[in-house]
Length: 308
Ligand code: ARG
Image (cartoon, rainbow, N blue to C red; front, side):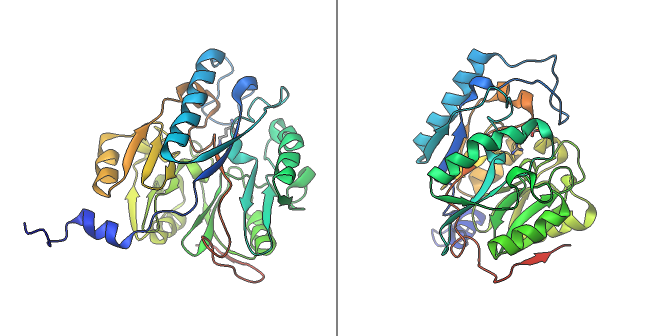
């Protein structure tokens, strides 16, 4: 093969630009993490995490993120909020022409609603204007973890946690296009368990998470999707974080690794098994603070909701 012959790998790399976001995260220290109730199929109150192992795994994740080039901020957890370690769900932060905003999650389950008492002041101190929707239980349920900037829209999963009506609120409040995907799989109750943006041409997508129309819509959003089987997705491999060309993953089935490396990504495995006991992994533990309207997400005055 001559040096000029394009391979799959060089073709994909030539057209794909790395995500510009994903270099700055909020995480919540895991001291109060426990399994006190079961609000997803992974949680079992008989199977408690070991606090020492939790701490070690969580700090190893912080270190891996920093080594990959990301900045990490740490917020203290709350004794009354054992799931708060899943920082992704606190709120959706978006920068843009009007400054930094955060759409606070309005959690589906009351067990998680006290988290806001600590996260809202943190967001405000860090220059994020909190939305009216989501605060103190205003409006439909909406959980960050169900929303990603990708392509021309904020892609939002709804069903198990986020309610369809929340999509309208998001579009109007943020002046963006919102593309809804209906989640039907009980084990992939947040979009971040079934969809992982990799760069502007690639993303991991698990069609088994969605109804048929939404599965087709999810695949159509991504120029070159890495299609995950249900079994692959249930390893939490889509619940990964991407920093430039590095993918920090809790697990990586061999076929998935082959595709990612073929596209030029470096796979870094991070052991967070103790934190899986609450039903979340690497992505759930990290909330990106550097997504921007106008750069990563085109502005659409008045917003727009697109459903399959
Ligand atoms: N126990 C938490 C819940 O059920 C886990 C949250 C996982 N977070 C995520 N971004 N998927 O709410």
